[in-house]
Length: 442
Image (cartoon, rainbow, N blue to C red):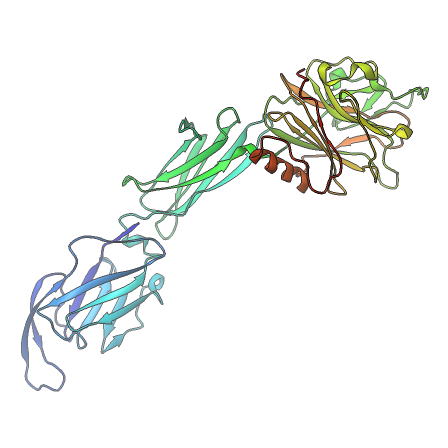
């Protein structure tokens, strides 16, 4: 809401100027050779005129007793800008002498007993006692620790507003900081931010308010936010027959290792250095190099922190803290669910997306190049969970973890559906099952 404070003057042949007062004027109406004495009062509203920024406001004045105003000079101006008026009426028309911010935004209406200025209330900040700004816009940015940093921005406020953050149950959230800036139009813009986790709130509100109690509020549901995370491999717990790049993102079997061909080498598991205890986290793995076919052998998933000893397939179960999808060459694709499920995936993935939803107990896999959801494993997680990789043996291509990818469209859709629906929902384009292991609690 904006409150306008204004000045108004009238002059007859440049003799007298006045503001809301009684005056005695020497007046010569057109066509009358003799001078006439004219005494009247200019009346303006006693209270401030309020209007929303961006709307149209009428600022009226009255001549008492009523008098024809067509021969008068009518000037609306700011107190320090008499020669640069908001609007100037003279010689029977509006003059092209006007302060630039108000050009093409004002008009004048004359009646027998009063006259008024009609104008749009935007860009009138120097005349405002208060202004209610734009609705707050909230932007989320997932953090590596599972929390979400939320920024809140709004503009068009006067005077400087206050900012507060609250959770869905009305609890106050501590802001990380706030800043205000003032533009050339004298209006205030505000930027504030806070970091929250799902344990703090699911629905976060940012309220911006004036001392008058007027406010605007923006809300964000953080439950559906997916965090693209930077993943590296823990060198300390690396199998001696695996070779790891300097940046800890590319892993493969060592050239000195001679695979006997007797089953998948489950002992070759490599473990991500990152740990998650809440939130949604997404990463991607490259499974094909340029001019080489996709890998035939790999294992990708998540593992409970501390479970660094891997032996054979029978020990790598959800109840033991392992959840994964495995590509075992001619033996096809299968999961380690109880019971295991074999899948037919065509084409063979060249880039695999992994989405971990810790709080909902979901682990989803995507063929990124095909923008296709492959499957979702449903379980329950406890403690810290981290990424799990196994490059297999004998392939030309290694496993390469990509730098902070953006979630594929399918992953975002799944996260959005999960936020509105506590039960996991299969994506329309997928023909693969959602695999449930709700009895598992590693």
